[in-house]
Image (tube, rainbow, N blue to C red; front, side):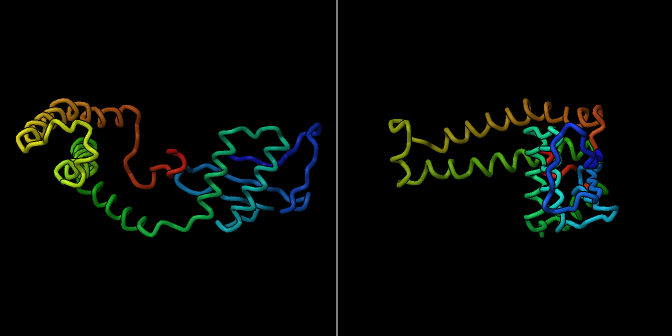
Length: 199
């Protein structure tokens, strides 16, 4: 998507405090994985001038009557990206992701990788609640005071949980690979959209 600050004759002219009236402003949002480039009089500006470009873009959108809630939200996220520092973990995460892509197939990543991540996150978030029910000072927060917890009940619950995860959820997780292949969703690092696009 490429836009220029061409104004129609009927729209009121508002002068931007950032640019003179004879400067041509262009911003390109062609790649979802990178910040848009702001060009003023053909000169590509860096990230530090992106804030000025976003301010100017909002002004142009207001003049042209094209400002809506979605484009305003997108520009707000672009502003946040420009203000926040770079993620220091990104290079190591990219290296780990590339290693995974080089050593495993897409089917293995989509199926077994998704299952491992799902199980790890599930049990990580369940662990505090599991431990709290056996701590004496947490018993006052127990909803069913007359039903004490035993290891036998927990083992029965754990077996049922494993059955649900591996016999019900795993077949559904297997569909992830076919879904991504059908819609041509890429797996490589450079094709992944920024977090703002996901939001």
